[in-house]
Image 1 (tube, rainbow, N blue to C red):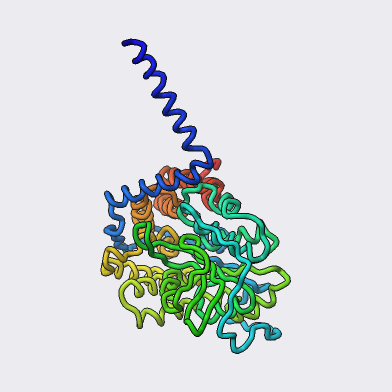
Image 2: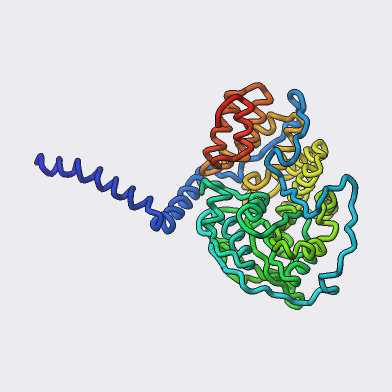
Length: 428
């Protein structure tokens, strides 16, 4: 009887090691790994329903309110990249430019030459950016983009400004991110030969609840009242009714990203018009959101107030932004649980900015903690970053250092967290 026991004692660990080795092979991971992660997430959310968590702002300043840093010194709530050579301090006017956009726009336009890619698990941003770049002849893929924008493949989100940075740093193309988009500007870009990446809300079969999503908009048809999109989750050449597309787009302040070759910069400027300027663009988006707060109800009203706060943060009106976010969070419990956008803080950082620069550090800690605890895997560098800054502002340096180290595990070499650690006397 000893020999079988000895054999099993050797064979079982060996089989486990072999299984682990096979599991972590890239080919197996790409086909099986994400399915197991999705299963674990489903189990976690079933046992800990994230839609039931409600954040209640305390609205109390606790300590000295810091002076805002320049936008380039910290993660951005939205991209603030201007096509203009200089940033005006007042509402700008564009110099006279030749008319490059047909007026009126054609009733239909469709772009071809976009190489469709499925995102697989947790690769929406890289897949969509790769698709948009393929239109301009870039021969990379989602994996190349992913290595740059999300070194930790379990990172839950890629921000628009991170996608813009990849284009600027890793290709010979340029890009611009804007908010407050409308159907007309999408049509103008498409009819002029520019596909557009839109950041939207998304609900569908195969996952739990609302989440953020990107789509490459490649066509439109006024007769059918539809946009054509390249969707990394559902497939190529999907048509979406205008009203449905705009409703989903609202969830992200109508954010869009346009890629263009340097020699077509003037054409992109002409299409954007005054939206080429950060200041004008953010005021414009803030006004859209304010207008929508008087006409919408339910979840859409929550999105409108959230968008209002995001644009006011970009304008550094932090007091008004905090009030807008407070209003949004107060509306959240009124949304039916099955419709609650409980992943919202995976993709947005505006409330952290607003509460930090109004001295509401405990609100940041509470909001970041709730966000991280609701995740099946708490891998979200922005939440660790802002919670660390709030801890530090309250004199809790050890907790701040711990969060900054977690931040760098979630996103290795994330520059804002490395800077904060250095300020605390810790070598990143």
